[in-house]
Image (cartoon, rainbow, N blue to C red; front, side, top):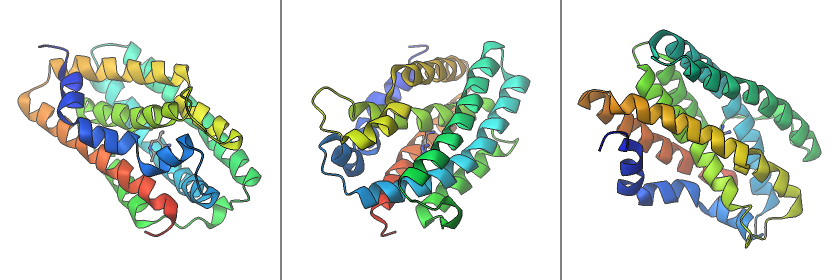
Length: 220
Ligand SMILES: Cc1ncc(CN)c(N)n1
Protein backbone atom coordinates (compact mmCIF):
# COMPACT_ATOMS: atom_id res chain seq x y z
CA UNK A 1 0.00 0.00 0.00
CA UNK A 2 1.29 3.47 -0.88
CA UNK A 3 3.02 5.26 1.97
CA UNK A 4 3.78 2.21 4.03
CA UNK A 5 7.18 1.21 2.69
CA UNK A 6 9.07 2.04 5.88
CA UNK A 7 6.50 0.30 8.09
CA UNK A 8 6.80 -2.74 5.82
CA UNK A 9 10.60 -2.72 6.17
CA UNK A 10 10.35 -2.36 9.95
CA UNK A 11 8.22 -5.51 10.04
CA UNK A 12 10.27 -7.42 7.46
CA UNK A 13 13.61 -6.58 9.12
CA UNK A 14 12.41 -6.47 12.73
CA UNK A 15 15.18 -8.77 14.00
CA UNK A 16 17.88 -6.56 12.48
CA UNK A 17 16.10 -3.47 13.81
CA UNK A 18 15.86 -4.92 17.31
CA UNK A 19 19.54 -5.95 17.09
CA UNK A 20 20.47 -2.30 16.46
CA UNK A 21 18.13 -0.75 19.04
CA UNK A 22 18.38 -3.31 21.87
CA UNK A 23 22.11 -3.93 21.72
CA UNK A 24 23.82 -5.26 24.91
CA UNK A 25 25.37 -1.79 25.41
CA UNK A 26 21.90 -0.22 25.54
CA UNK A 27 20.51 -3.08 27.63
CA UNK A 28 23.33 -2.61 30.12
CA UNK A 29 22.38 1.06 30.51
CA UNK A 30 18.72 0.06 30.85
CA UNK A 31 19.44 -2.49 33.60
CA UNK A 32 22.09 -0.36 35.32
CA UNK A 33 24.91 -2.89 34.87
CA UNK A 34 26.91 -0.75 32.42
CA UNK A 35 30.69 -0.61 32.79
CA UNK A 36 31.34 3.14 32.73
CA UNK A 37 34.55 2.59 30.74
CA UNK A 38 32.32 1.33 27.92
CA UNK A 39 30.29 4.50 28.17
CA UNK A 40 33.44 6.60 27.96
CA UNK A 41 34.63 4.65 24.91
CA UNK A 42 31.28 5.22 23.25
CA UNK A 43 31.37 8.94 24.14
CA UNK A 44 34.77 9.56 22.53
CA UNK A 45 33.98 7.52 19.41
CA UNK A 46 30.58 9.14 18.96
CA UNK A 47 32.10 12.60 19.06
CA UNK A 48 34.27 11.65 16.07
CA UNK A 49 31.21 10.19 14.34
CA UNK A 50 29.09 13.31 14.91
CA UNK A 51 31.78 15.52 13.40
CA UNK A 52 31.63 13.37 10.24
CA UNK A 53 27.83 13.38 10.38
CA UNK A 54 27.70 17.19 9.96
CA UNK A 55 28.96 17.30 6.33
CA UNK A 56 26.60 14.43 5.48
CA UNK A 57 23.61 16.37 6.85
CA UNK A 58 24.82 19.51 5.05
CA UNK A 59 24.91 17.52 1.79
CA UNK A 60 21.41 16.26 2.51
CA UNK A 61 20.27 19.87 2.90
CA UNK A 62 21.59 20.61 -0.59
CA UNK A 63 19.90 17.50 -2.02
CA UNK A 64 16.59 18.54 -0.38
CA UNK A 65 16.89 22.08 -1.71
CA UNK A 66 17.58 20.79 -5.24
CA UNK A 67 15.32 17.76 -5.42
CA UNK A 68 12.47 18.07 -2.95
CA UNK A 69 8.91 18.77 -4.04
CA UNK A 70 8.13 20.17 -0.57
CA UNK A 71 9.90 23.25 0.87
CA UNK A 72 9.30 22.17 4.45
CA UNK A 73 11.83 19.32 4.04
CA UNK A 74 14.63 21.90 4.11
CA UNK A 75 13.22 23.35 7.35
CA UNK A 76 13.16 19.92 9.02
CA UNK A 77 16.74 19.11 7.95
CA UNK A 78 17.91 22.60 8.97
CA UNK A 79 16.51 21.83 12.43
CA UNK A 80 18.72 18.74 12.37
CA UNK A 81 21.79 20.84 11.52
CA UNK A 82 20.99 23.19 14.42
CA UNK A 83 20.61 20.31 16.86
CA UNK A 84 23.96 18.89 15.70
CA UNK A 85 25.58 22.16 16.68
CA UNK A 86 24.14 21.68 20.20
CA UNK A 87 25.21 18.06 20.12
CA UNK A 88 28.85 18.95 19.45
CA UNK A 89 28.82 21.45 22.32
CA UNK A 90 27.23 18.76 24.52
CA UNK A 91 29.98 16.25 23.66
CA UNK A 92 32.66 18.78 24.59
CA UNK A 93 31.01 19.48 27.91
CA UNK A 94 30.21 15.84 28.68
CA UNK A 95 33.71 14.64 27.81
CA UNK A 96 35.29 17.04 30.28
CA UNK A 97 32.90 15.73 32.97
CA UNK A 98 34.02 12.16 32.23
CA UNK A 99 37.68 13.00 31.73
CA UNK A 100 37.66 11.88 28.10
CA UNK A 101 40.24 13.78 26.01
CA UNK A 102 38.47 14.37 22.69
CA UNK A 103 41.65 15.60 20.98
CA UNK A 104 43.27 12.19 21.48
CA UNK A 105 40.47 9.95 20.22
CA UNK A 106 41.63 7.47 17.59
CA UNK A 107 38.65 6.41 15.48
CA UNK A 108 38.28 2.64 15.66
CA UNK A 109 37.63 0.49 12.58
CA UNK A 110 33.85 0.39 12.92
CA UNK A 111 33.78 4.16 13.28
CA UNK A 112 36.02 4.67 10.25
CA UNK A 113 33.76 2.38 8.25
CA UNK A 114 30.65 4.28 9.32
CA UNK A 115 32.29 7.60 8.42
CA UNK A 116 33.26 6.20 4.99
CA UNK A 117 29.66 5.13 4.49
CA UNK A 118 28.50 8.69 5.26
CA UNK A 119 31.07 10.07 2.84
CA UNK A 120 29.72 7.77 0.13
CA UNK A 121 26.23 9.19 0.70
CA UNK A 122 27.54 12.74 0.18
CA UNK A 123 28.25 11.87 -3.49
CA UNK A 124 25.89 13.89 -5.74
CA UNK A 125 25.08 10.63 -7.56
CA UNK A 126 23.30 9.42 -4.41
CA UNK A 127 19.78 10.82 -4.71
CA UNK A 128 17.75 12.63 -2.06
CA UNK A 129 15.37 9.71 -1.40
CA UNK A 130 18.18 7.28 -0.55
CA UNK A 131 20.05 9.88 1.54
CA UNK A 132 16.96 10.95 3.56
CA UNK A 133 16.19 7.28 4.23
CA UNK A 134 19.68 6.83 5.66
CA UNK A 135 19.29 9.97 7.77
CA UNK A 136 15.93 8.81 9.16
CA UNK A 137 17.40 5.39 10.02
CA UNK A 138 20.52 6.81 11.72
CA UNK A 139 18.55 9.22 13.91
CA UNK A 140 15.78 6.72 14.67
CA UNK A 141 18.12 3.98 15.90
CA UNK A 142 19.50 6.42 18.47
CA UNK A 143 16.06 7.66 19.49
CA UNK A 144 14.62 4.17 19.89
CA UNK A 145 17.71 2.90 21.74
CA UNK A 146 18.01 5.73 24.23
CA UNK A 147 14.24 6.10 24.74
CA UNK A 148 14.27 2.47 25.92
CA UNK A 149 16.72 3.49 28.69
CA UNK A 150 14.13 6.00 29.95
CA UNK A 151 11.28 3.47 30.21
CA UNK A 152 9.54 3.33 33.60
CA UNK A 153 11.05 -0.07 34.38
CA UNK A 154 14.62 1.02 33.54
CA UNK A 155 17.40 1.19 36.13
CA UNK A 156 19.51 3.64 34.15
CA UNK A 157 22.22 5.18 36.36
CA UNK A 158 21.43 8.79 37.27
CA UNK A 159 24.65 10.08 35.67
CA UNK A 160 23.62 8.63 32.29
CA UNK A 161 20.05 9.88 32.21
CA UNK A 162 20.96 13.18 30.55
CA UNK A 163 22.68 11.30 27.73
CA UNK A 164 19.59 9.12 27.28
CA UNK A 165 17.33 12.17 27.27
CA UNK A 166 19.43 13.84 24.55
CA UNK A 167 18.24 11.29 21.98
CA UNK A 168 15.41 9.57 23.82
CA UNK A 169 13.26 12.65 24.49
CA UNK A 170 9.85 13.14 22.86
CA UNK A 171 10.90 16.13 20.74
CA UNK A 172 13.69 14.08 19.20
CA UNK A 173 11.10 11.35 18.64
CA UNK A 174 8.85 13.87 16.85
CA UNK A 175 11.76 14.95 14.71
CA UNK A 176 12.43 11.30 13.77
CA UNK A 177 8.74 10.99 12.85
CA UNK A 178 9.06 14.04 10.58
CA UNK A 179 12.05 12.41 8.89
CA UNK A 180 10.07 9.20 8.52
CA UNK A 181 7.17 11.12 6.90
CA UNK A 182 9.53 12.72 4.40
CA UNK A 183 11.22 9.41 3.55
CA UNK A 184 7.84 7.66 3.29
CA UNK A 185 6.50 10.35 0.95
CA UNK A 186 9.58 10.14 -1.27
CA UNK A 187 9.62 6.34 -1.33
CA UNK A 188 5.94 6.25 -2.31
CA UNK A 189 6.87 8.02 -5.56
CA UNK A 190 10.22 6.32 -6.15
CA UNK A 191 11.17 3.77 -8.81
CA UNK A 192 11.74 0.15 -7.79
CA UNK A 193 15.45 0.70 -8.29
CA UNK A 194 15.55 3.62 -5.83
CA UNK A 195 13.39 1.71 -3.32
CA UNK A 196 15.78 -1.26 -3.49
CA UNK A 197 18.78 1.05 -2.94
CA UNK A 198 17.07 2.76 0.00
CA UNK A 199 16.22 -0.58 1.62
CA UNK A 200 19.84 -1.72 1.24
CA UNK A 201 21.02 1.53 2.84
CA UNK A 202 18.56 1.05 5.73
CA UNK A 203 19.97 -2.44 6.38
CA UNK A 204 23.54 -1.13 6.14
CA UNK A 205 22.75 1.52 8.77
CA UNK A 206 21.42 -1.17 11.12
CA UNK A 207 24.61 -3.22 10.70
CA UNK A 208 26.87 -0.20 11.12
CA UNK A 209 25.02 0.80 14.28
CA UNK A 210 25.50 -2.69 15.77
CA UNK A 211 29.23 -2.53 14.96
CA UNK A 212 29.34 0.94 16.48
CA UNK A 213 27.77 -0.17 19.77
CA UNK A 214 30.14 -3.18 19.75
CA UNK A 215 33.06 -0.74 19.84
CA UNK A 216 32.06 0.45 23.29
CA UNK A 217 33.90 -2.47 24.89
CA UNK A 218 37.12 -1.06 23.38
CA UNK A 219 38.07 -4.35 21.76
CA UNK A 220 37.69 -3.58 18.06
C1 LIG B 1 26.64 6.18 15.63
C2 LIG B 1 25.58 7.22 15.78
N1 LIG B 1 24.38 7.04 15.18
C3 LIG B 1 23.41 8.01 15.34
C4 LIG B 1 23.62 9.13 16.06
C5 LIG B 1 22.54 10.16 16.21
N2 LIG B 1 22.83 11.39 15.59
C6 LIG B 1 24.87 9.28 16.63
N3 LIG B 1 25.19 10.37 17.37
N4 LIG B 1 25.87 8.32 16.50
